[in-house]
Length: 231
Figure 1: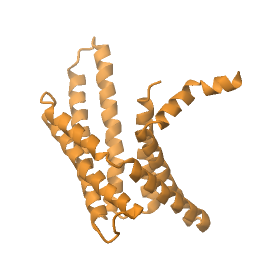
Figure 2: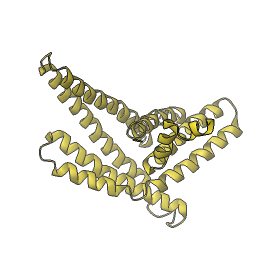
Figure 3: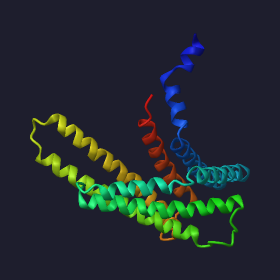
Figure 4: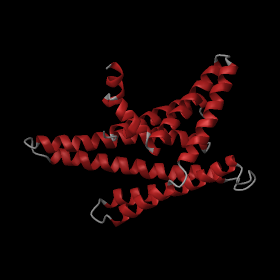
């Protein structure tokens, strides 16, 4: 009876469904990747060098697995860019930033796939030497587009809330939820922007700070997919 209760528990059923998706597994490995990156730095600072090496190895393995899970993901972003471009009724700024963001991620993830092929030994390490740098530039463009999109959504929802009548409580709640999501996304993109600025050497923070920022955005990603997992 106890076993049945555990096996058929809604949370376990939701976890199984979450892990059954490629996106769910990829975000989980991203969380591990950045968490152990932070822990590796912290352990090294405390003099626990063996533990730091273990965390570093886990980071490398998680990175390798993630790259494999994201292979051919650019196709998703091509489709999303096309859908946004075809949506003529959308706000022009939101439409343009969604298209640009997705096209930038096509470039970013395509070059990231090259890095994965290198790790597999299918492409020489000497080939495409600047692929990681260009990948980060595409990520940079995608995040700038995302931040612009977030700010635009916050501006639009704020204007809508100010123009609403006090009697429109239900509509007000829906718009407030939209604003909350846009604000959360702004924070999310800001932390990722911090990471890419360090990758491109505009900032020079330590591995612990980058790992912590990545852990925060990874938690956002896990939470986002978890909340959208239906059972």
